[in-house]
Image 1: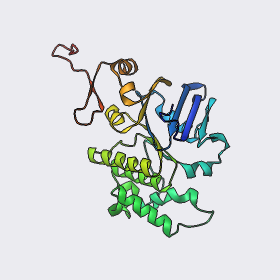
Image 2: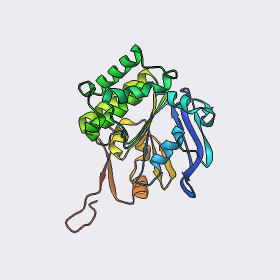
Image 3: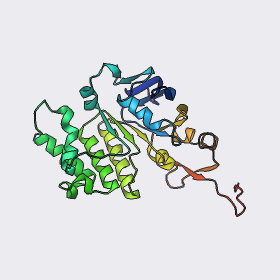
Image 4: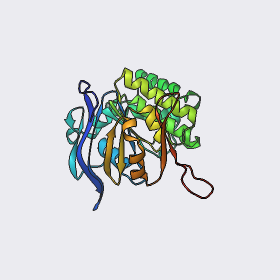
Length: 274
């Protein structure tokens, strides 16, 4: 649940079950994300993280339970209405045709344009600002297919930014990014959360990034929410041992005070070092 009842809830899920055909992936998952909050969803491969994002974004209908966007049932929104309020960035992003970086970023303005209308001055200004903030201006005229994985990731994050959403759903937003760009991306979203009250839900494999940047962490295992709370409440040895089925070492960074997680070390004989 949201940590501050005085802050409006941007996105909520209640007792959600969802899956693909007869295969249920999520089992009675509930969450709330407040305006301005970053919720990290963590868990091993196959835990249901990406499926949960699809449900929250409306591209996958739950078989049970409900999702609410800005206090209104998500099922009541038309797809165009959702696109104006929710930006989604998938793990893998590709364009079927040859588009330049600027063209891809401008696609984020499509939900705000009237039918058969082209982008105006403000749309271009927003796109150029987003490109600058992600360090992409020198690449504006390049084709997306010619970029590295990290550069493409930043392009689609920039596209999400120009949508001016109330909620951003980010599936592994730091995949393919180096340390410098990981920090820059999270700092940018920290500014947007503070300035625009943007709510962010991000799936992350990197538990230390979740600990350092997220306000709260939702821990999933086999489609079940094991816990949701502050990183230091959720990223414990007991929880991580249960969810990841491995031994870990958990401490606090002497610099940031955030929880840090490491695989437990082993000696030359393969025994876990206490």
